[in-house]
Amino acid sequence: MKIDIQDSFSEKLAEVIEYISKDKPKAARNFKVDLLKKIKALPQYPFQCKRSIYFEKDTVRDMVFKGYTVVYRVDVDNKLILVFGLIKHQEKLDQ
Image (cartoon, rainbow, N blue to C red):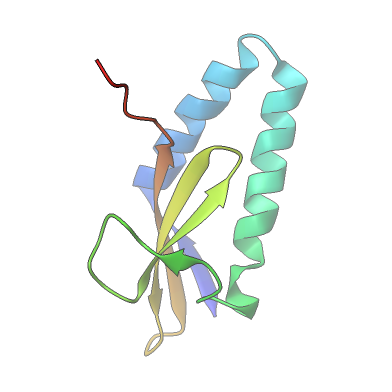
């Protein structure tokens, strides 16, 4: 399977890296390298991650990584993984 990283993911990743690098530039570089490594491993087992909580399709998956969720779609017919979302985990606050 081929991995296609969408602009929406790349833009969000750039924002996250910029935010982290304000305090810890080395941690930001490590975060990016480690995340991309994990994404590159997806073709081995594309359905290893849980079904997305954001979409009602079995082909859309959520990969959790250091408090962030990478959202991707598996296109079996075209042998393609579309990585399109990066969401920061946020807890609901009771008020």
